[in-house]
Amino acid sequence: MSRERGGLSAPGDPLVEVEHLAVHYGTGRERTQVIFDAGLQVAAGESVGLIGETGSGKSTLARAIVGLVRPSSGRVRIAGEDVTGFGLRQWRDFRRRGIIQYVFQDPLRALDPDLTIEQSLSEPLQVQRRLSRQQIRDRIVYRLEQVRLDSSLLERFPGELSGGQRQRVLVARALATEPRVLILDEPVSALDAANRVAVLEILNTLRANGTSLVFISHDLGSVAGVTDRVIVLYRGELVETAATTDIVNRPEHPYTRLLVGSAPTLSSGAIDRERRAELRRLFEPS
Image 1 (spheres, one colour):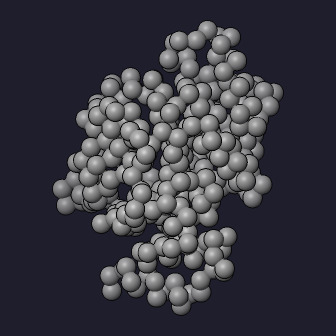
Image 2 (image 1 turned 30 degrees about the vertical axis):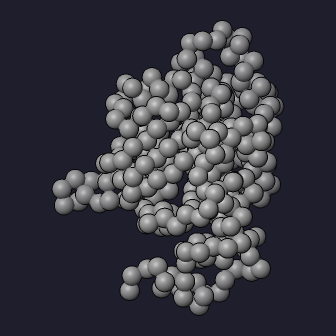
């Protein structure tokens, strides 16, 4: 059961609304529940962090929201439209509208190695069939500039770019359709310090310009500077939801306290092994 504190509901009509969502993997005796009764809202212009260690279910929950994983029960609404029961064709048509976009964790897997950067960025706009070739070119050049990349990279292939450049190309590709909501799966986990800061600054600019963000990460320190609220997942359950400042300064659930203490940038120092074990005993079965 998620612990929620005052003033936590998304202001205004939510762009993303999840109610009592459950996800199972496998069938028969191998059937395993990985998401339990999840609920969340994301408002227009709001940035929400989805935090938990590897295996907590944060990526599964996010993928269920955008139809990449089928929920077992519950409801998902995006921009007021119930997408819970969508089939493949309905999801394809919905994605073409570009309301919500997902930025995958691994740019090398998400970008076709045989396509130039221009071809990769143009693809989602060509699917929409609303713009001329020149309009598409102008749009993708603008999006590259928005993520601080030069248009000279358009003729290159993904393998010719650095990790930080590829990550920013993924963000530019997601922005090409002018989405209202951007879901980012561990967007800075594989980057060095300089590129991490650059990507976080870009996300803060998007946030200031009104794009809703869902930032998935195992590192609370990366999320703290670019989110309004944080949702903490542990073993598929939402255990705490609060404003980011409250999560950082006054964490309530033992698991949240563990995450805060494990992020040296957020605390006076990383917690020691004994304290870590003590916190884990509070929320893990013996």
